[in-house]
Image (tube, rainbow over all chains, first blue to last red; front, side, top):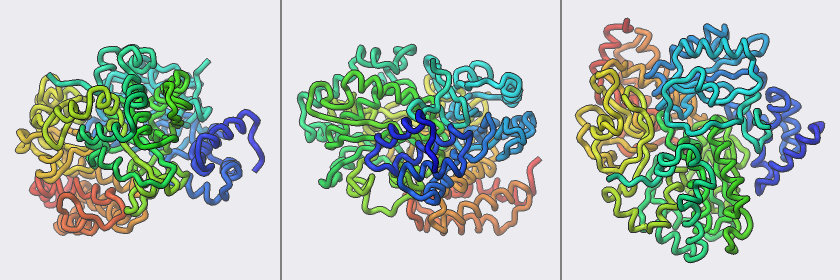
Length: 204
Length: 429
């Protein structure tokens, strides 16, 4: 239950302060723990338990309910939607292309922890089907061929920060709606990039 | 002329509709000022009741009536449900990304009416970009005095926190959402008590959808009666429909209810018809949980009550179009698989039933279907939702289980010969 570095501890205290009861911060703190260690580790669970007054088992029980608290994801988490709208528009073929190009099967991570590949349920991008996310940054209207390019680009360039707008520009097509102006922030880890959780990359 | 309430600003001001500067320059936060300066909380609630605004999250419950159930016990909480995850639905994402201040102002108005001093917006974890946009709007609103202590010079205080979920459709169900926000597993609670009586931390809580709340600034600016004058009785106001699937012009459209399904799917400024000139086979009218409609229904009016009469619902406003080439068994499987994956596992009929439905459909698609599988699909569905009637009955704590039967009922009702042919004829192709 050793403490995190001071900046992380300060961030954790700020999150705890947002809620009437410390337990509510469990979810945000689990993201913080993942950010710190590149995945959800036993040490991370223990620290979250310590911060919220729960037992590690209680924290683990919460974490295991959700899909986004992953133990050892790859550097790039590639999530391919295969729900109804994406299914109708070729999401299954996109998933097959991603699996083949990365050599990583659905639900698995490669030995070098570069890629985790997963099929996911609806990403709320149905008008831009088929949709893909990389570290929860969305790209819409992806063809199987563009999905292959995306995987090759990630492998070759290993971008430090993945941004929706850049992915869409490079590999996307039909959008669900006009996104409006771009967003400078992006994901530097397989955790949703969100400033209050300290998990956003790409900002000055 | 279709009035535009929700999308007007983003359509007129593409570059900066999400900023406080643009929002304030286009009338933003005037409704909050008016509510705080000139109206009592009861008067705000009365306007919302008079508007006959119905919830846009799926259930369609009248917003003002829901507010009226709020128990006296304090503190009160407001939670905005931005856990948009119903397959086919992407309207709230656009509201979050393109006009977040409209939502923040609506939340502040609702909080004032409800006597709430701490509110939360629960955004699904996969919505990182929309959550960032919303967070910046919240920070701008704090800096400008529209959130925090003594809002806009009044004595009213409100703290608003954006909270990210972590990947679980079930958290869109309001009691599961509250459990998740309490740092627990997102398992639905038995109702009653309803959240308005015992919600977050057991305290009276109102949970409203993003689109519902986003209507409030307009309603306070123009009056409840003006909102109630738009659209047919029982389906007042405008409404966002998310069009996707085999439609020529996918996207979110704000329409006045009462138009026909043909207008919505084929209208040149709306869906624009079916892709590649193909024929329409069926469509999902209100999210994956809703039983499908077929071309015979094209001239039916799109209203909440007409949808109920046809044995379905407008639900989340997600319309998924399927053309003549669609394999309806595979489409039903895509929906059933979703519910099997998202079942929280508390209730046996849902946990086991959704998995059985998935396996039987997979078997039929593999070409190993058995004649008895048709009855098996219906029998398993009946165990989850007795009688398979509409509105659905349920043997489960929440409506997720019965939702999984919607695609089964749909293919049996409209495409039974096709399903039978898949069983007697073996696998396709």
